[in-house]
Length: 222
Image (cartoon, rainbow, N blue to C red; front, side):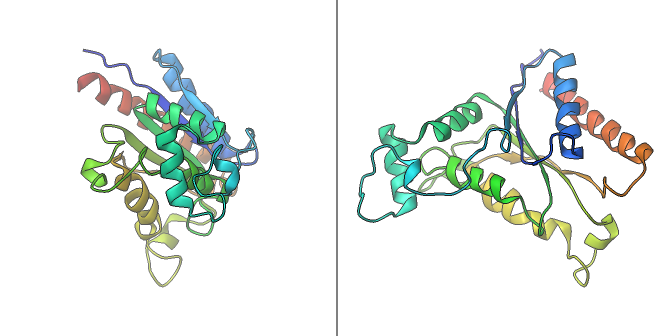
């Protein structure tokens, strides 16, 4: 029986014509061809605010001292998070597959995506006491990192060069996504798209389309 997947893409790239943008378009195209409606948060296009501050709370519990995590929990439980956070949490709640597309900068995500994680994954909504990993509130959903690099893949094979890629991804995949209960799918990396041939870029897009199509097939068989 075909299960209706609800994909959600979070894009963190400043240039719409970038290869990250092409990966986003490729994913949406495959989803659309198969009859799925994709939710999208294009963070730069939205001018998403990455900084965590008083503006995240409509009615702070303690306006004299900002203890951010405590205010997040209070605001989530009392319905007083800022509207932009509420909207992103709604998208996340309604989805069962979240794809993060971004350039790998300084072995991590761009600041705007880090801010999305900091502000949207609030206590109560995404984690809590005795509500982490297998018991995390977001269990049953899947997440996937899709990113571009500025270096060749072999440079991520040695701790003496750029370091082991899985080590760089661990804080995001394990310390953030799995921590909140998400099942993390194998990542997809497009290596040096700005420095390879047009044929290689098309190959990347073809491989990525196949990955998305495989996810849809797996979803039908579950």
